[in-house]
Image (cartoon, rainbow, N blue to C red):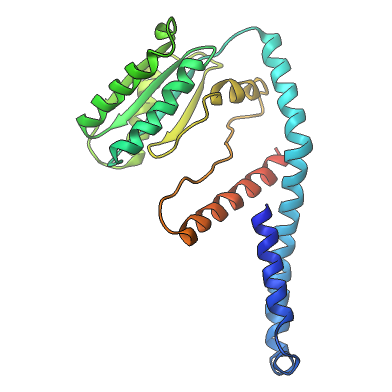
Length: 243
């Protein structure tokens, strides 16, 4: 949100720095562009206001209500992580799966990781990471399962379809959840226990998380990704206010 404010202030300063004669010469064009800009930034302002209200008031209230409902139900639901990995650098895959297994071992109701891969080397890496993380969670080994789907490299949709069928064959419970994870995304360690209570509300079919970019490259490149993810967070928060 701060990035948006800085951007708007910068644009305002640039607009005010234009000489008056120049403005008069192109006033018709400026009026047209100004109207379009006003319309766009009015929507941006509405979304910013809605996002701020959601994050500071609506979300804490909904989270509290969901936690109370989940505690009252007394059941601990299982989570299935569906992960697609294709041509991801080993060092990135190691970070990704380490975060996933940490979240799985910390999930109160247990978890199963269903990994869709193309290269057998990824299967070996995944098993090594699982064994490494399991050492830090003694007594929890039985609560975490792993299934690897090795498919042809025919695209992400085929990978998702194959792994969703694998999850269906595992007979998930009515209240269990599926966590979709891209092969280059890390998840918070508490993602399951923080997300699963929201599904006590039958009107909720899916939730999304706030995401941060961990990008390599120049400062401008990193800032661009930070801005894009900030815009995503604002838009998702605004949309969430409407249910």
